[in-house]
Image (cartoon, rainbow, N blue to C red; front, side):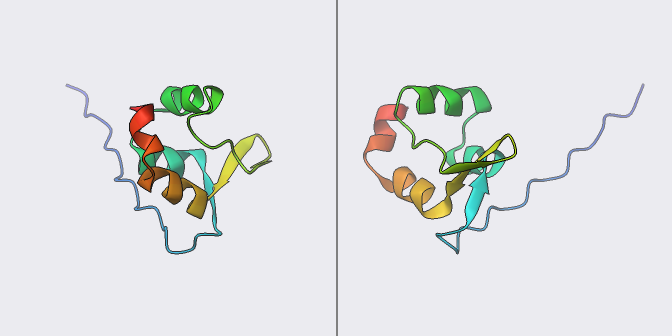
Length: 78
């Protein structure tokens, strides 16, 4: 049988700098959701829209994401 490829464990997202810009992978990892779910939340206005895009990749302020994760609004998204 063919050996299955090993996935490297994801590095923990550094949340120590609230002004840092997070890319979508980091935001999804923090929120524990898929890319499709994050897109639906943004389209529905449940999750904050990205602050900016670098190339085609959206970026969020770390502090904005952490505030949202701690807020009661997060319960509405689930």
